Length: 72
Image 1: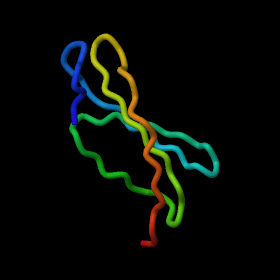
Image 2: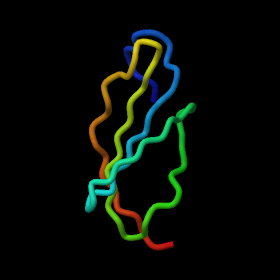
Image 3: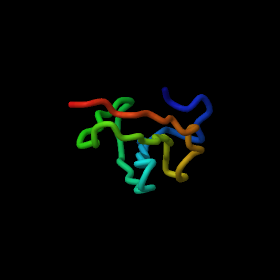
Image 4: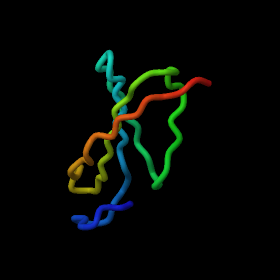
């Protein structure tokens, strides 16, 4: 969901995805309210967090969400 209290119109979102075992983080710019992650390793734990940004910069990120992928 969009932020409850935005400091101006939201221009987009950033999704941060960290492979827990290696600590390797990547981020993706997302325009809408949904995004499909692809290319993840099977049986691997990832930590995700999200933040909205606007012309004033990034907002506060969400709390981490941890998940483990399944097989193909």
